[in-house]
Length: 361
Image 1 (cartoon, rainbow, N blue to C red):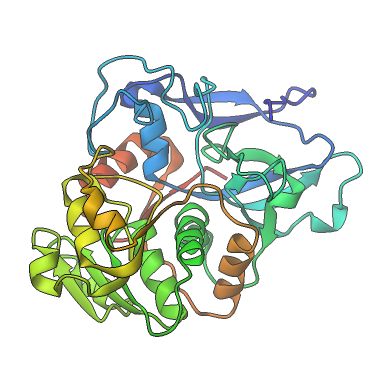
Image 2 (image 1 turned 90 degrees about the vertical axis):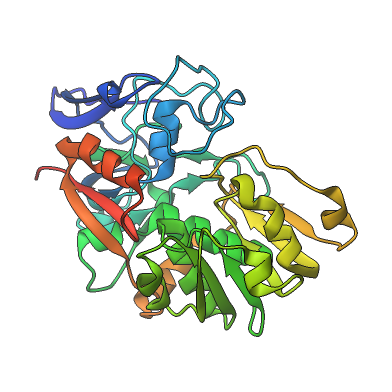
């Protein structure tokens, strides 16, 4: 979806990421306001969550040449292959999470939706759910780090709840990603599920969504965050500096849902039972891991990669909100123009849950 600027000269304020690099690449500026085309709607952005992927895209972390974790704070050069699908289309308005209000619709659109408060499904399967091809809000086309954003009408979901705008903005990327992994892993009642990185946005969502299906959740989290994770319902929380095999025992978990990876990857396979499933959609501790093939094939372990969200995933998340089965974990809010401060705090990993940006009204 290419950017389509308004023909009437209207403008808005946005954070424009000008290329691969440090915080200096985040430019607060006036830009043309988008105009919705056929099949699109224009949203006033009410709140936008901060995600690892926003920072990773700016740093070019998805490049095959990067071997470190996502806790880097600078950049050592331009990485043209550092985007999700190919080269990132800089200059780009990032922002994968969007809680917004419909303010206009494109030609032939449903005008009854104007005024609705909605969430945007960040992961879009433009070729249909039989294809694994995806485009992502804020990574492949302009996203929510702005006062307004245009998106396909089919990707917005009205949510009836009493949550604040900032609380709703914690949901799309983290909970969509988490529900996709829980769904693909076939988590069900009676299973034991291990969740490394359980205090983060995705991890805290996995804890809640696995519990909702009746699983027992054992969490891994950093010091100082155990009480926050335990309050979500985890039956046990172990420290991220501990030895999972020594603490939990070998072959004790049915499923591991892991967005941490890095040096701890090998232990995740050892704690899995025979026939267990390892599921991942990220690698914040490092993308290059050591895999002992014997742990994988002798125990009939299934490795499941999860990026493209399946059809029931986002409707499931919205239904969970409306039924009160999950709750937001909102760590802090910042004005949109203070995005660099928000991302610095995000990278320090001292918070539990999500950090959210609020555009000027």
